[in-house]
Length: 367
Image 1: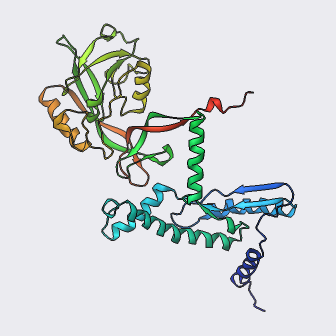
Image 2: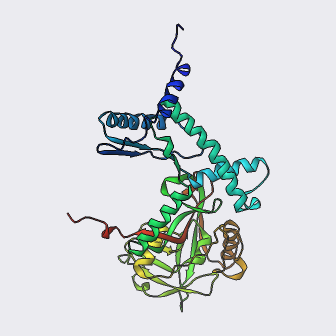
């Protein structure tokens, strides 16, 4: 007999016997008890967090199984689209190939190949932990039957009027070309500038000064807002300003959201490219203008000279032209919080897209 315990020579043999004997399958007798495992992403290997949660679930499953219940621990792995895409794209970069050059079908094959490699690793790890999951029912989020099931439920919810489509601003990654949740956004403290622009008041020699850290968004402005209690601008509410560099006129509106003690007390409102402005725009029925493409270049909603420019190239040109028109009051150094994607590192943009919503009021049970 060996002097030290060697688990590898014993545990795997025992586990294989458990699996082959069907001990992890539902007994089809007694009350049912089921846990669906939170699917680990197929982006690499399991970590200590997985081991911790799997131990808790395995304990519950084994306890209920020993009590004679019809027990199932449903196992599966998740595709985690963005995360898996990043892993595969980095592999392609090493080969000097991009996702767009490869094409969708070929890229999907690469993803599935990686899923098999990473998913198999995760399966081996879970078995090595001794988890009593029913491997005969193993699933992957993108398996055809699961994808068909999701579509069927989605269509049913739509037909029942429980879900609907609407426009909403999202955190948009112009590199990965996808929306990100708030959890996937890193706020980075960075040095920048605060530009104070003069907007001429229509039929007047006066102007109103607004400050912005993103000059390119001015091309999507649909209002200037002041606080209704601000005596400096009380007489201007309801008037219009000539939006520089465009042929548009926009109203001066009153909203208590505006901090009259910050900057000039006047705020440019760009509902298509700012989350707070989007809410103000809905409140005042303002137009929502999207000025960016999915790749964060200027689209056809802006004057012709800016179309196709990268957002930061457009910024430089706009600042130059505003200076040439003597419409810059001042430029200040300014520390700001810049939203970046946690995977690509790209500066994110509030971007207007179609999103699906659930009518929660119809699903709530009355108290």
